[in-house]
Image (cartoon, rainbow, N blue to C red; front, top):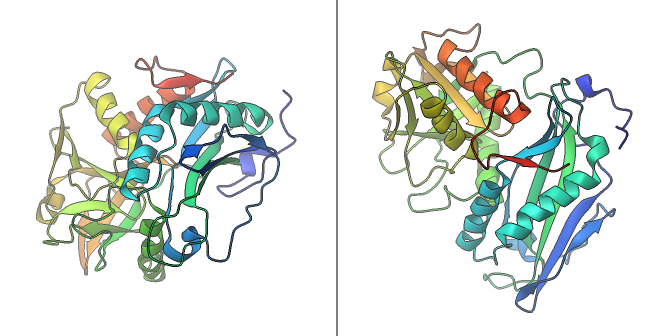
Length: 341
């Protein structure tokens, strides 16, 4: 399929409508067979559950063109698993995992002309989401749901390279103890909008949230898990029931162990020990790894030895190895790469 006439190197990270999206409805206790549509609009009752009580969850993953010309996506089975868990946590009927992966492949294949060419630095972002569809005025789950997937080509998250960012320790809590922190629910991101705008207004790139119970332990940022590198090259990631289970973080841990021979540790990370680490990063689908140069805790600056000029050496190895796997330069572990066409 001939690619669309798009300036792939300058498309930025934003929404651009593509030709097809996938839609399936849940009614009378079952999902219909679903399928592709060219209609990008959603018509809802003014009393739809999603509008009244925010009953919605979503996922995010990407499709790439590899060096040998294949279109692939990265570990979609884990996105299917996570969305199933999110749905259960919000009393929504899970969309079957095998159908989730098939739907991702179908909608990407239909929009193959929008998958950026190899070497452009761009990718096709894939957004599966589900929401309470029917009218609900009492506080209860919906009885009808819609599952959809749209795609949009996006440029590299960091144009011109990933420069270390400065983040602040937030006075806000990201999630309640035993709440929805481990669920990829729209409501979690809604509550992060005011804190992130406050951070931007104060000159910071992002917030880091502490555990809501004791406010002594690092959890994650508004949209990404965190990784730390010790002086002896050990990879440490915070562990908490309130942290979203990042697929990128899980992949980085395995890359560190199996490809770089690093020791890894998932444990509680206390704010007071953060100055002992030499590198820090945020990890997620959009940027893979965003290097952090400085954390500011109410005026106290915690500066990492890797500095503010470039990604730390160990973090760079992790980034290069994982992106090399995604792009086909490096042999992937079994099941990590799903070839679409």
